[in-house]
Length: 75
Image 1: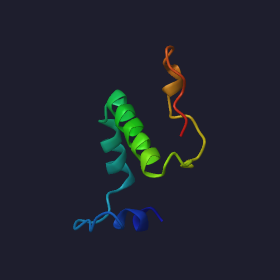
Image 2: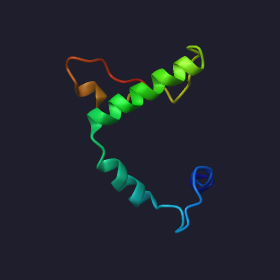
Image 3: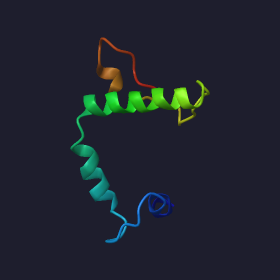
Image 4: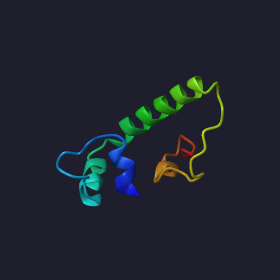
């Protein structure tokens, strides 16, 4: 299922990346920058869908609850 999903976005001439390769890519992301980019993307989606609800899985983004001055990010 994972491979079928990824193939929709790219041809992957060298094959679909492994779980470990994708994990390494996510580990180098700056969490604050990812949060800003993710929030911007979701705001853009709201504008496109005229504020319609976009359902994810209903969980909190990992470790987002640890920030004392902000509420957890719900996804």
